[in-house]
Length: 105
Image 1 (cartoon, one colour):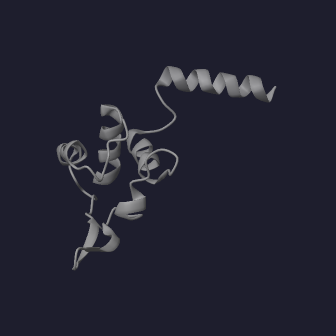
Image 2 (image 1 turned 135 degrees about the vertical axis):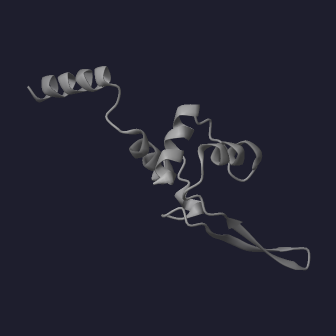
């Protein structure tokens, strides 16, 4: 009985499009460690944070992940395309859009 109800709910949800709203899906991408987990480097509130201190020869350096909150879709897309430390993780255009909706909140 429970399986039948679950199957019915899944079919109904697929006909409606999705269980999650775009911003909710973006939040999941941002925080979920099994997917991408932007929060690991950029902070739980997208506030940016220091990732590491290291020596470059004799010079002390700091690796910093910049804040992401409030960035536009265009800024996120540009950042993912050109920055080697923030790989795109093969995110689809829709996933990147959903991520930007979450960060725009």
